[in-house]
Length: 318
Ligand SMILES: NCCC[C@H](NC(=O)CCC(=O)O)C(=O)O
Ligand SMILES: NC(=O)OP(=O)(O)O
Figure 1 (cartoon, helix red, strand yellow):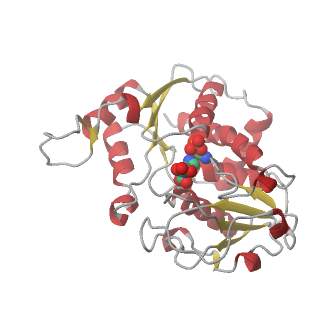
Figure 2 (cartoon, helix red, strand yellow):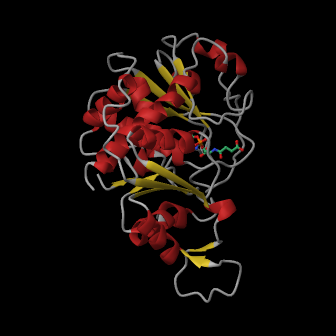
């Protein structure tokens, strides 16, 4: 593996899952693999889980880690070609990515979408340019349209339950801010791939107008009635996202979509997931987060072993 930006970069999904699960019981089996290798983690947006789990994953593999908070500590980046840089941007991504590529063996990049221009965000222009100019392996730490390290950890969490073909429901949740579609797109893409392998049964529940881009939902059952969708569910993945159709907008929603304990009555005692950070009692009720059905901490814990499996695969190819 040279680039990790989506499920399409994974040759053998079941093998990668097994590697992640194996690292959970034996984190130091490859502690020499990354000796004298350095990963640079470049953040254009905030992060808690991705930052720390990827650092720890690299350390477990014997790597050195450099973190660059580009948004706070770097020069303002220009991404457009052919412009005279007489405004606020100081350094072009052509030089910035190329230079970081000479200092590191692997780079990780977090860059959220701007949510203004659908075409610009969905072309993954920023991530792709970074890959092109860095000229070394790059791992997505969440890009404009996907969050593959999160989705791998999500699939690890579902797989380690050992349920046979569990019913998994991605359930839209309310929020006060327009959030990216990256997490739900990516979760859906990975669940659709897992469904093709017979591993899960996958449904998306969202209010009308909140349907995700078709490119990510191939094979998913899509419904607008949340209560119907979660009947007999084994896992409910709660997440807010802004509208794809009316790009980046928050649309009026009739019903109360925040999941509460009583909503779990007709489920198969569903485990509740969320990528975090979560806004309590806005996106998800505290009674669920603090109750026995929440597995959000276990899910976040699996970020470490998922990142480790991905870095192992990249290190084996450089
Ligand atoms: N990396 C995990 C999710 C990141 C982002 N959440 C946020 O921006 C939350 C912001 C807030 O709640 O104000 C998202 O949903 O894509
Ligand atoms: N879930 C997740 O990616 O969290 P951070 O944004 O804190 O990294």
